[in-house]
Structures are given as structure tokens and as C-alpha cells.
Image (cartoon, rainbow, N blue to C red; front, side, top):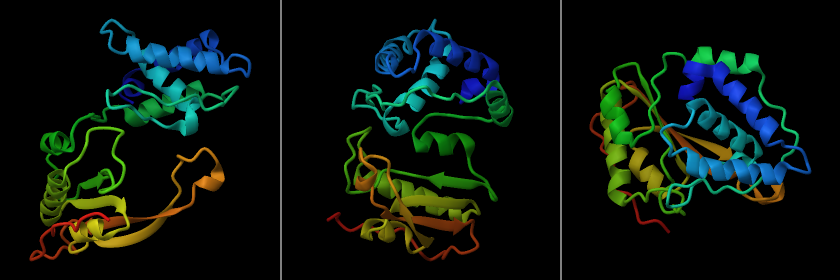
Amino acid sequence: YKMIGVASLGVWRALMDLERKYPTTRDAGATSYLAVRERALTDNANEDEDSCYAAARIVYLNKTCFNGLYRTNKAGKFNVPFGKRYNIQWATQADFEAAGRALAGVDLICADWRVALAKHKPRKGDLIYADPPFEGVYDGYGPKWSAADFAALAETLFGNALAGTGVLVSQRNDENARARYGAWCDPISIAVTHRVGGHGGRRPATGELLFIARGGLNVDRNATPRRAVAAR
């Protein structure tokens, strides 16, 4: 995203070059995917690597991997298998240039949520959207969250809401989430289909909650985030 914001045409050209070198045709697609994935594991650590090509590889892998996932192992290495997607219709040069204009001047950071909020210091009228891991479910795809981490996030968001910042939080529809956010946010139930099962019939919609605090307008100043119950 950063590279598209500063060099959208360069990223598009690099993507077209990848398609020429690693075609997504039915006879070559699987081999091409594995070759690009392997390059992403090694070349991205090379400081001399062309940043446009590094960005283009992410686009390439996203469009050709299983279900468009971005997943890493505990070592932080991209490990999504080939998605059996062939003859990809890539976004056009005009699409990339439009995305570049939208991202120009936008400050994007990849960091722990504490670092992000400390850097940007949300103000009244801003909006924070938090999508933390679901508490009490499988968490093997990245750094493990402790109960203290979940509590710290809820308390920090509560403080921001009191100060006038809008807050949105996505969580699983369970007692843990309601205990942490229900006292000071309005919950909205939503049905979400997760693209994990290999067959569409194995992806039933699951219940999630979107908690909303409208920047001080509906926040009970006497409420505090409560301790979550133990996950069942």
C-alpha cells in the first residue's frame, strides 16, 4: 500500500513483469506461484530489493493464493498454498493510478496497536477501528495475545471513547466480548462467512458483534471495562 501511494505505475509495471516471467496459465500457474512465493520469503529481506517488485509480489500472491488469504506461520513467513486460480485478470494501469491517488499522503504503519495509537494520538472526531484476535479461539497465526493484552486494548479504547473518539470493535459474539465492551458500546449482531474452508458448503455464517461507541455521545462515564469470563 505504501508503494502504491508513492509509485503506483512502478508497482503495476512490476506486476506485469511478474506475469510475463511467472504466467498464471493453467499449465504453469502452480509452478509460477511457488516460485514467486519462494522469492517473497527470501528477497523481501534484501535491502537492495526493488520495492516496487516487493509490492507487486504481494499483489500477485494475493490473487493466486488459496482464497486470497494473507497468513504466516509463527516464524512470520507467508505460507498460504496455491489457490488453483488461473489466467488472472489483473487490475489495470488506470486502477493502480486511481489507488495511488487515494493513498497519496496517507500515513500507513505496520505496528503493534499501542505504537499506532501512541503515534497518532486520536482526537475528538477521529475514528478507531479495532479488529483484534477473537479471545479464546485458535491464535496460531501470529503473536499470541494474553488476557492482559485483551484487557489493555479494551481499557485504552474506553479512554479514547470518553475523550470523544469514535470506536468500532469487531469481536466474536460471546460472553468474553460482551463483558469487555458491552457496558460502554452499542453491540450490533452481524453474520460473517469466513473464507477458510476449502469448500463453500463448509463456510457457514458465524455470529459476530460490531461494538460501536460514538465518541462520548453514548458512553456511560461511570462504566468500566469488566474482566472477561473464562472462555468455554
